[in-house]
Length: 225
Ligand SMILES: C[S@@+](CC[C@H](N)C(=O)[O-])C[C@H]1O[C@@H](n2cnc3c(N)ncnc32)[C@H](O)[C@@H]1O
Picture (cartoon, protein in one colour):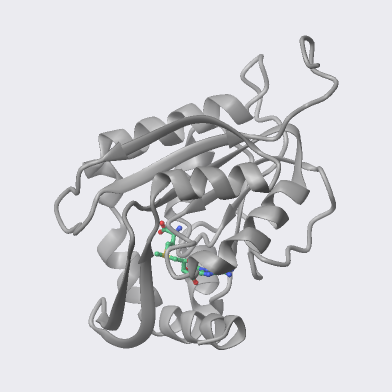
């Protein structure tokens, strides 16, 4: 499948599952303390030193906005972008005070160097690893110097075909990517790894889950070469 038809399949599939996905994952984060710990660390990195909300943070591939809302609850100025209009409609209805836009994370309608953070929370799991570099380059482009990126992904090296999900027919591949490969690709996009976590599968998960926090270098920061 080429990149365009893959995006089309992802959009159509998530349009079909949007309502049920939102319902089934509504309280999923409550069962995942380590995932919440990574989000809390990310929130602390992107907020101002005095605890103010800091620069805006994009939740790319936000789905129904559950993590956008979680970040907002942690004091982050978060907004969401998703390829699927049905997902964005659910997000807007569920979180009317937050901003959600339809768009692709590989071509963002955002100026260079303006965001304090970018979150990719399981939103690259349908992107073939060979197509990750342009997405990571786009994330690096929109981050301000010193801004942070947090990615959650399936850790491994596999491709699983999904023809049914959340009670609906879908046309999706799910990719596991080794954490070293994610780290190398982020480094290739000009970001510096800060920390990574790999945890064992929890209930409902089939493989280890990876989390990687990276930072865009700030040449004007004290102590920079
Ligand atoms: C597994 S869901 C995760 C949703 C959300 N981050 C969450 O954790 O609930 C993947 C989401 O990424 C979105 N997505 C996939 N590729 C995308 C792209 N290129 N640009 C924007 N969104 C994308 C899908 O539409 C879907 O909503």
